[in-house]
Length: 605
Image 1 (cartoon, rainbow, N blue to C red):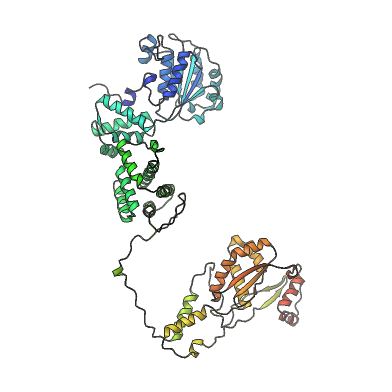
Image 2 (image 1 turned 90 degrees about the horizontal axis):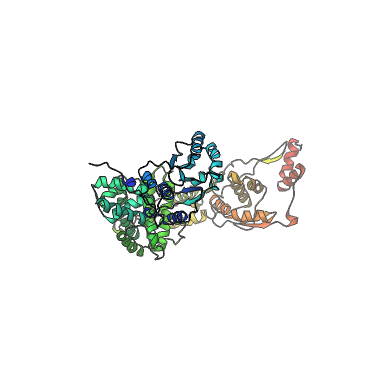
């Protein structure tokens, strides 16, 4: 049994024509060699496994060939080519900058530069992973890189061009190597499989090419792994099992279920995927990619973007014809949002399942037609109750007195949730109760109002004075209507106004202070007016008017309360500046304050 060599090394190109996927770069290098226009420094940059170091070695071998071929390739027969092929050439030096990145290593390299080549015309120094050199090593290398001897050529290779110093980039000819596309990798894998005598399915090679993510070396390494697992018979099912790749069939099946709005079946398919050991993030990213492939399959112009085998491509084209574009836009957005939130989610499975429910409801007839960029995340009912099991509840016979029904209705209204209330409202339960005037006291800083809970004088229940009715339901409805439209007074409006101001959030503190000095004025039975002093405050009050109305309607049990905002006329505005002016203003509002002041001998300080 001979020595085993991995495919990435065994099928490594030894000539420019054998390099796969970099035709533009190899043609440029061959033309430069043929014309004798060689630069003193080159920088080869690009992703891993795309041929940077390979092309550097072929370039070094070709420029030292003693008898180059007519097509610009090395002859492989002269002493220089044989020495290179046998890895004993003294004209080609390779340095791994990842492990030799110090200043001393660069200085040793500079010493070697002074020795001219023994065979051939050029001495070539290939520095791999050059971005790993330290800053001091780069600085020590600058002068030699800029003005080397005429027989020296530097070839730098890196996967991270942005880490190279600009002073280094300006001294080199830069060649950018491209990622390999799936079609190119599949063709090369097919060539290797035929050379080695392996049997294969095109779909299996396509999966390997996609898994390689644009790197030919990665593709050959995965190919060797799959060959070992399948004993040289590369089938689609065996390859996806070995590489832990989710089968296309799941994605095709799920999209069909989305179009049919089959939510339970989608949940079962996802459960089956989890039982096979796949992560939810792997599944949702694959689903997003599948939807993207369906989207590009709808237009003949974008079909070349679909990097799959011919058999799979036909399935994509068939399913894409049944998928509306709006469905695909919104589905991709939902999958993208789920993928972004997956890592931070505490219940990852639930997050994916909610996304599947939303995807299954995108094509419902009553679904809103929002934009594709922002689908509305609304979950509709998943299961409908059969008509025969949904029996209407019989109306209970009201055998209690009308007063009990009225009290129950009033209690229900009282317990409704207020939008802005964070504690129990101090308002009386109904407007039929009397309230005492708030007590007023004067301190050293001027008058202040302390609101106290009023003593309630109970009134006779109106329901007891009404004659009994045979239809208790009608009485209850009549009393409920009266309760929801209690009469309001200006004092009630003012009291609720200040309650609303006190419940405003901290972010609106500045406006709350301004609202505290505003006194609402009752215009008619349920409409009150608010006077402001400028247009900006008016705009804010108009924006907040709806919130005030909702609050007062619930507190005062009158659904007709409305608020108007008006800019006050100059004669209506009273500017209170000093403490005496504040006191005079309060006297004008409440004359009893003067008697209180005289009785206790109070004075303003």
